[in-house]
Length: 453
Image 1 (cartoon, rainbow, N blue to C red):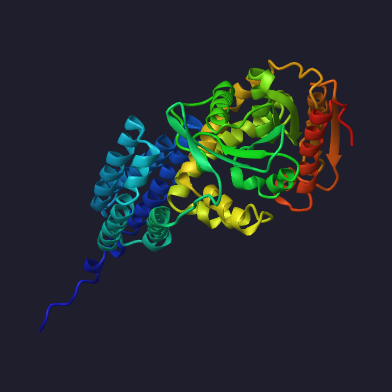
Image 2: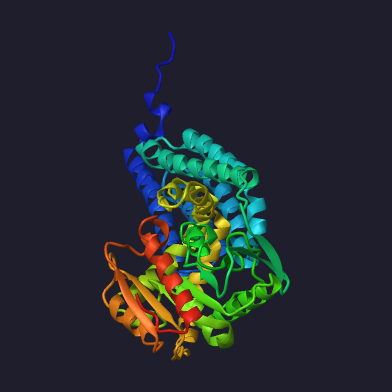
């Protein structure tokens, strides 16, 4: 007669239900603990930090969650998850050097060929270990969804790396010039004087002016450019404030043999950069057009300090998200009003880890740029056109726009009815107001008369 089977030997879950409940809570606590730690590190402790710090913090948080699972399951349950130690060590070994060494964007790009397959191997190891040693509802309800999420990150990272290596985003016109050891992109069209120079807003590149530039080119010569580390320009030698960016542009226009004087036209934050340039190079500045421009007094707005603090933390996350392919999922929602070629180029920039890293760096520098622009108290009688969008503005915006108009005794302030901030560049019909504002300043400079509409 054969020995009767012992059903309790099939699983420790049947042998000790209390221990099974404990392991489920430990899995839940480990995942939540790692998640909370990660949020604290990237949104509080290292809020606004550079990409390697954000990515390294996320990896260390994952490592801590895995280490917690390994330690507590071995001490408090009869289902030790020894497999969790290997990914915990591996994640920490990668995360800590990222924070300590601060690799460049180029190095991070090269690592994109390495980390997705390594992450996939780690997920496979963890799946195998959990399947063998975890006999509890938490395996399917908690660990498997977490592994699926990490798997999507690995797939997204591999796709992003291949896309960056195989997709071209070349300018249809313009070229780069060597300026003080780095290369800056400039595109000039049209003829006549004074030359209009267009300053990009935050997150904008030269394609953002696709409606405005050719329209103004019918009136005079007009140039767009990308600041260092942005768009088709080369990387910046160091962090740049408003004065450094003005010096860059001054040398760029000289290298390209674009003589002054210039009409400076800036959209959003680009308006503040235009004011700094006008202050640093007054003899080269013939007039200014501020297109729904940021103000040097931006932090006086009731909601802006809170927005700045929040967005500085969020903007620091975006390069890491883009490195895993996340930005490509949303890039198709932006710049929809631009012409097709410009729209493709602008979307390619908006999904690039390099460009989002540049946006994060620039956003961190804005308080300094605003303070520098405050030193400009007057443009004298130089023509000044302040064009303001009337939709979606925060409290106090129109008062600051009125204050900008007082910078010159020869100014005109106009609201564009039914226009949003972005539409002044991106919408074909609304952008005509921007083109006309720049043209009005050009005409006032040529005639020497008061600017009028």
